[in-house]
Length: 465
Image (tube, rainbow, N blue to C red; front, top):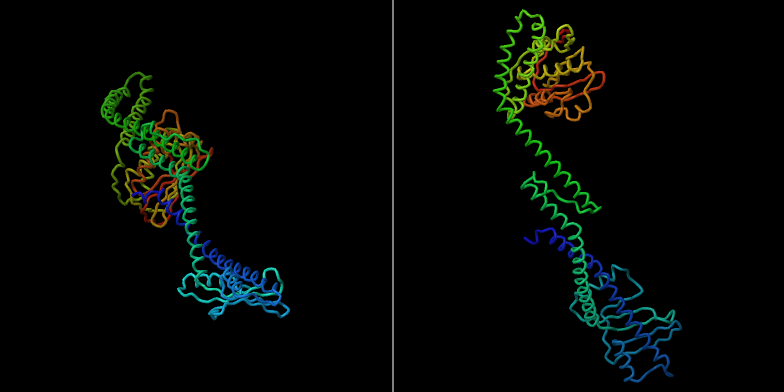
């Protein structure tokens, strides 16, 4: 389980990448060590030949020759000067060279290739090394060396490089691990712990993460998480209050409607009262009671869990629109309703629910001061779109901010905002939607969409309330 943690993975990856980089350093380093080894023996061989040049006869005795060759580690040494003179030191049983390397030729890749040949070869080849003299321009030096000592030195150097690489990798991985632990892992663990605690009880304000005050990305993440948790907590608290309100309204709705029904029956007798003042105020009383009953009904519908059941049928749209005019009439100030839709447009929807949505939108338009309401319907690719446009004074900004939210999106004082919320819920239950297209001081436009239509012809008509 430890290897699955982010910290362990970071540690392993850091060690791996550092070791990988050391491999790229190791290869040219070994090649460079081999070249330096041969060059240093070539320089030592040149210094040994200077003893020959300093002698009167250009020769040294056998003990001195062995001493000079032993110091160089070579079997034979030869110096070629530009004037044609040659000085040579060799043993009596000098072996024949098996391979020749010229230090003045080659490139990086050839040096690397020769290095691996030396490392991986199990033979002790006799090498003839040639190169320029160190301090004598134009002169060249040849030296006869065994390959086995070179191989041992190269392996010793490689082991030192590997040991150093391991130490560097461990130190680097530890530093990177501690840095990432402090910068990333610990804050992420704190995020996780806070989210787990918040999930256990989202409504507990003490479970909200407290920002540490960091100014980097982690600090911003802490601030955003804190704001998100607070927003969720407030939303849950608000929903809990609304749920409690809905439960309470459901319980008292039946009794309240019974009381209003009794008041309606009693008030019906006022219409036949001989007193003119009573007959004059009776219609207003009837209207107030009817509105109270409608408000109770809408509140109960909204408090019901889930959308109401949908019973779709196929019916012509125009007769349904004709029923809206009388329902929104207000006496002498009846609004003008204009219908623009294809003749014999057949739709498939829940007729009662669609009627409620259209009636709610037209009534809202009348309450917004509309004198002209235009209803347009069209059908394209099996979808019906109905636009209700009015010439009222538009929706206020406070209503736009929470247009389809119950108890928040009312456009008039004292309203509940349930009308549009219920209307959208009814449309979405039928697979459609209700959206606000535009609103300004010259009017408001809403659009209904739902699937299923069959149209023939086109008709345009006007009606009043």
